[in-house]
Length: 254
Image (cartoon, helix red, strand yellow):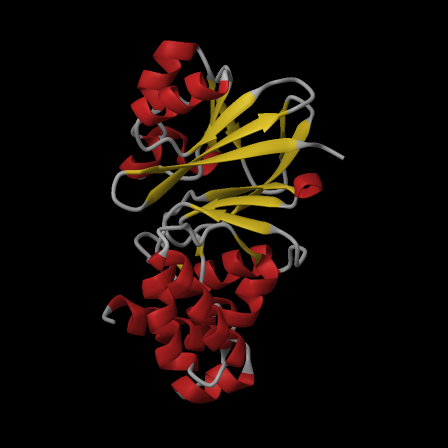
């Protein structure tokens, strides 16, 4: 059993950057550092030394701090093999089915294209922790900037199969707006209605809604429920990819 500590750092308008510390070795990774300075400040406050960067995809609000952090700490940058040319400072390339060791903490890597063509996710199985970038959000999923509905549905299917207790450390605080949309297509979902009330209460207190759990996502996230007959009926389809595409299109203009 690996033991990790996770520190959540809000940056920019609505991004989350994560510090992941392997207790056994003291190795520390930052996941998708949008910027450098808040990461350095939190590291200093905790007395941690950065050893790694784990990137999920190439967008600037996920890799913007890479080079400055590498220059300051000499850390190793790990990122998607399929997008190696767009990850600043990349040292180690990983892909689907591979594992990467942060000290003694093992992360399994999933290729999850759709939002971008080279997107990956890191799952620390022993710690019930999934770092999924912009593929899966709390009650949402990323826009299809470089992929197809079939690709994204397949990608989400990989993540949907993970255990219920998996904590979903996504990269943005979008939950409230995602739930407003979800209610428009899945309004009869009692679990979703309850989650909406919980999320509104958290945000009213200025608290984060991330991480969620995969059990919550399977019950309430319409992008994981495209093969659910009730949701399919609501959007007028039966093929899961077509249903997913219809829901994603509706969200794009919501």
